Length: 477
Image (cartoon, rainbow, N blue to C red):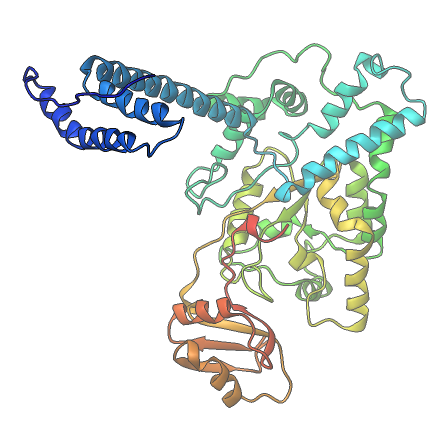
């Protein structure tokens, strides 16, 4: 560029409101340029010297021209405003998308949805191989096979209901104060197809209920979905085939279904007993029985009207999933307020044998877990309604500071247990005869520290707080 000398002094320039920042920056730039010029005089730079020097010259020129400053600042503000506007639009669009997808019909941590999708695909393949349809349209009743599968697997508003306990800030379904919120949220979050299926199945009383909640309920049924329209026989048969494994296990008594009528008759302070205790009540001649007979349970599955509730939730303590009865209270309010009539309930604590088990009970428990019967209970398109309780109630005071020891090592007495755990804090008591053995610290902070440290070598195979506060979706479903 042939630049050999540049006078970058700001002396004598017109003083203005720009003078001070220019002088301030030039105070650092001018000596730099003069230093480079001195280096050039001694040939300190090679062929790149003009470029290096030009960079400083351009920088100085930029700093001494306020119009450029104004242009850059204005451009930056303009770009910032445009970027913020686009970001807000994207956020609003994502929120609208989530609102459209909001459903009261969610399965247990995604299991039921995946099961229903798999069931629908299996049904479609089986129906096609059986000659049910030659083309994807014009099946029985003039409804396409795609629509029929959507009616079956997409009857979520009248099927899989999400029951929330109202104890979390994000609860959007049934709460202690407003049981109608679940119905309203379900209807508003459902698609037009789901609403159509739902309105076909319910009676006028339920429609008036929806209207009283301020919901838009069409008077006439949509075309192609007349009341009482059954599923095509071959499709219904294929869907029923998927539930055969459930029926077999129910008939063998490995899984027992609870009678909802009996459950709703219990007092307000009722706590759910385990299956062994429920069978004792059954043998005592209680009427109605707390458990359906194997034949009654199998008939309910075959009926295929989703009148069986399959409960999914997180256990709150080992040996007792609902120590203060909060889950029962939420569940009973939900069952009384639901549009769908649930007659029987699968609740693992009352439907399966719990520890300690006899050899016969252990064999029955193993049968219930093997073969996929429990999975199909949650995934069944025709037989079950999944009831999901995801909130974790606050920890009761009696569980503060208590940890439980799983598979305690043999030949350990209380002194050895105290010696291993005393480093986490003051120990108030040890109950090694409890199942599982428990240790109570003076503070819950000490109990959490012991849990975070994990099982102490030679002490036990597992250590956890007695009250399990792990969030529902962090439990590895």
